[in-house]
Image (tube, rainbow, N blue to C red; front, side):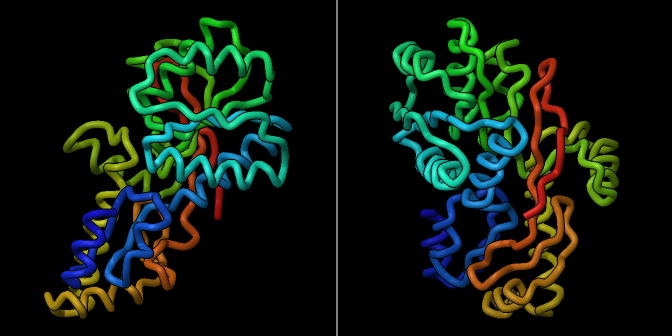
Length: 267
């Protein structure tokens, strides 16, 4: 967000590969992103819980010191309330290690699912401690979850689902070709940031070529006019805010110290 303000003021185009806060592109007309935002992934998380896991009740655990966590939590809560009941919104401070008191209350509430829209370390602590306490429920996260969760949560991480921007097991042909090329040179493309950054850079190169100029305004205009740019993570068409429309999300499941492709969800 801070960088967006600086670049907007300087009228230099910015393409973020991973800023999901809806407010980022609202900074100005020089700001774009290739990832979907929290509104979309919050909807995907809530819909997956209600429609696939048949969840009627949920709790939401939110890191109150993280704009990512609070922003995504708001989106999840808003959507899930259309389909079910939020039993508790549990707020915890950054760097919390012991979640016992929170989990004891959750155990009494007995929800169908728990949404944990935070980054991977705190989320892993929550899931591990819940498992040790005998809680039997599914945990669902957003794109802040990564396979590094196993480092902090061990085997307790297995079986839980999260929403991601991309996965190297996606059946999409363009994605599969990228994974093959990348693998020959660098090894496994095991994080979404790899594909998103590739899309952001290739889109910028394409915009420069289309503008036939290094003038920032002309590049910005070329980006704003982007229609159906074929990226690794999907087609990119920017709306009036610089957000990609029609970008898919993937649902992943943790299994055996890895994330496994489960399904693709359209916009």
